[in-house]
Amino acid sequence: MSDAMWTRGVEWLAAAATDPRLCKREWDQGDGIVLLEAGRYWDVLSVPDRLGMLALDLLWQAPRPFPGPTLVDTAAHRVGFFLPPDPGSRWIGAGLRSAGRGSWVAVPPPYRAARFLEWLVPPDGTGALHAPVTLELALRQANGTLAVLTPLGCR
Image (cartoon, rainbow, N blue to C red; front, side, top):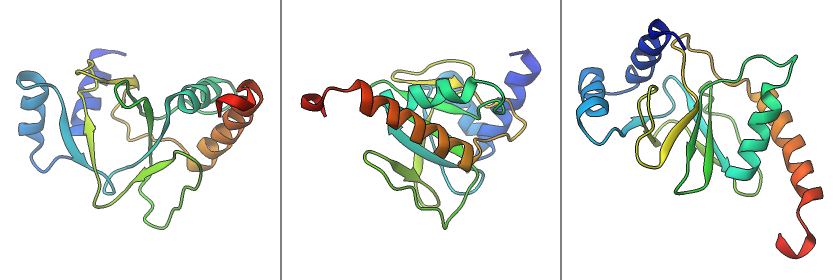
């Protein structure tokens, strides 16, 4: 990413904070993690890491569009996909967690990891997010692949 993209990514992400300047200061001078409210600019779908990593790999494959912002939490073993806000959406599946309006998400700055959080695909500042239908298809395909690869006794 270019410096301009990093700067736009920081500004875009910090805009979700109640005080964007304080948010950026915390990223630079604090522990590097801030809580941002979901539901205004984006929602987050959190999935188990094996499923999320496989789905993200599928999203990178052509002809699909470039994947949207994606965050990994190595302590919780989860991958978070940033989606357009949709108060009526219902994601159903084992291990799926949706964060929308009224939920808070811990986020590091787009330019570095902080403790256990790291961007797999940082925001580029354009506002581009994962397309829900495309993400759902990738998750279904990844889930099918994991079902075949996981021995029956390990489920």
